[in-house]
Length: 107
Image 1 (cartoon, rainbow, N blue to C red):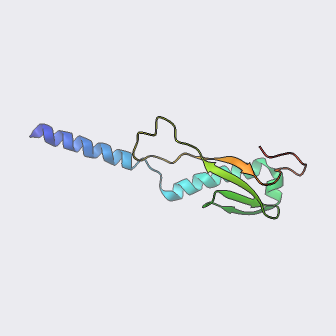
Image 2: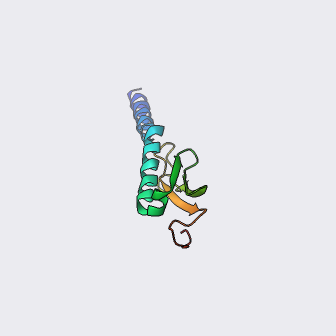
Image 3: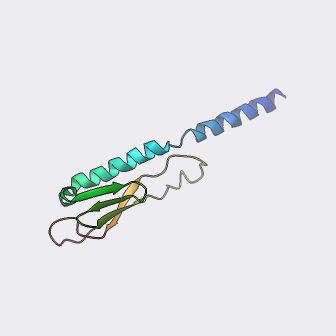
C-alpha cells in the first residue's frame, strides 16, 4: 500500500511540474513583443514608418499598409513529448514591402 501511495504522489508531483512549465499568456506576449521590437530596432525604415504592432496576428504594420509577418517556430523534437511547456518563440517570416528605403527585397 505504501508503494502505491509513493508512486501516486510521484506521478502527481511530476504532472504538476510539467503543468507549471508552460508560460502564462502575458509572458508569451511580452516575449513576442520583445522579438518584434528587436526587429524594429534592426530595421530603421520600419521604425521610421511604424504604424502598429498586432500581437494576435504577429504582424508589424508600417509605411501605409506594409506588413512584416512573424510565425511561431516549430517545437524541437525534445519538447514534443511534453504535454505542457513553453511555446516556441516567434521568428520573422516575410514582409509585403521592402524593409529598407532602397528597393532591396525582404528576407
